[in-house]
Length: 70
Image (cartoon, rainbow, N blue to C red; front, side, top):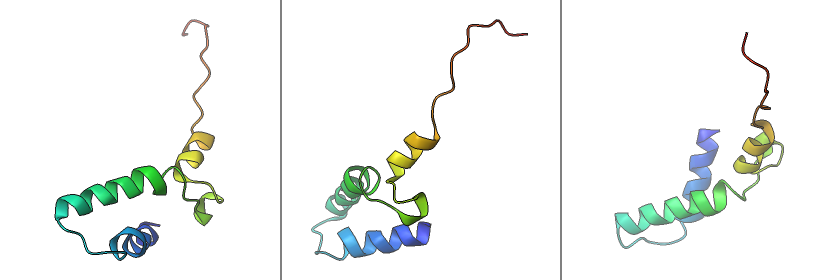
């Protein structure tokens, strides 16, 4: 999966233009991951869910009980 991620990173933000500085490239990568890749981009390995949607679906909070511990 990480190889697929880096391939997509290379194709989508990195190879689309020349970057003026490493700082601007770093900002663009951060923005791409946080604004596009994690919240919106669907992945076949996750059942066509975005990483955030998958995490929300499979990491439900545990119910709170009021029973005293044994």
